[in-house]
Image (cartoon, rainbow over all chains, first blue to last red):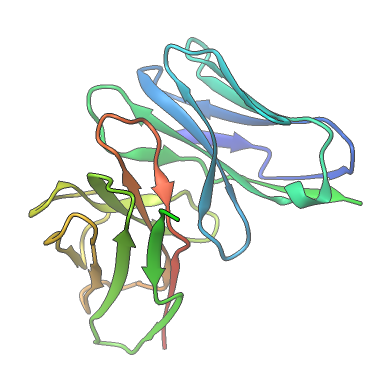
Length: 113
Length: 112
């Protein structure tokens, strides 16, 4: 059974700092991994998706990596801004035609001005 | 703009009532999904549908029902059999063959 863990559960940083959010998964037979952002009371916004054949994806100040052998993904945020404050969720989809995304519980990020 | 519309944004249910949450997408996506989000827990899959007139149970389907009569619509009914329905419900969709999921803005259901 795939389990996804996100550490830390909460993170508070000063504006301008570079930071890393961690996501670990138990089953290396992962098809892809997707990072989402969720603002309070809102839906999920897709940030980056990494296929199992890829090592990383970049979008602006965001960079996500995937290491299947170690069961880890990281989301790197450069030069953090107060507008980056949100909960960040990672979700993995298993190989073999699974339709289910397995979610971590998220990391709540606060960027202080 | 293409996207997923969930309505209503807030919904209140009395004990013993059935309520239906709406999910409509104009992305021409094939598959649609319902997830439930509770504080301190990851999202959990309730039901999903890959084609019209067909749907599959997810991990927590008990007390819920769905229909898929049209490609763009996937309503979720929370029945009185669902003992703890207070939660945030999220609808998602995906184009068959494409890897990424698109989510709606959610419906917050509260039992009063």
